[in-house]
Image (cartoon, rainbow, N blue to C red; front, side, top):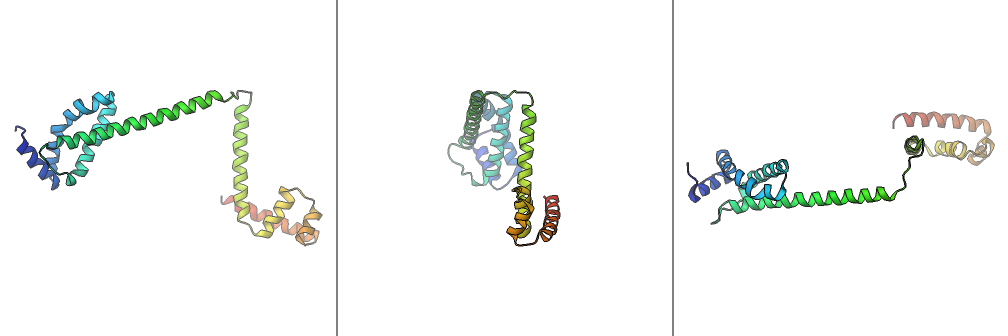
Length: 192
């Protein structure tokens, strides 16, 4: 069947009403001209151009209910969708390339850390940082009294008698308190 403005208008009106066959006919008619005349010359890469064509047709199908047919037909609308996608792709590519360039420049500016064991030191530092975060989380779940006993005796390494006095308990009572606090910490840690 030949293609003319009357047929195009009829298909567009049917497509706007949700007619899938009309949508398919329009997509089939305009896919090659969009690909060869609009997208591929601007993108250059065939696979990227095919992706943009697919996205163009998908957006057209999804938005056809809002399309208003005019004297110029459907081509300018489809071309505008394709051009917007080409421009968006170029912007994303430029942004990514700028980010990669900035990263490479930063990496060149950093002194190399290729000392023997450098990787092991980095892993150990990351593990220490993770352990410290987990400890803070586990401690935050404890009662104030248990947390204070652990902080003073274990983390601050203060003498047992001094901590007992600060907490206002006898040394034997502090021993029991610390034992219970550490048991509570172990349970808290296991649930992280």
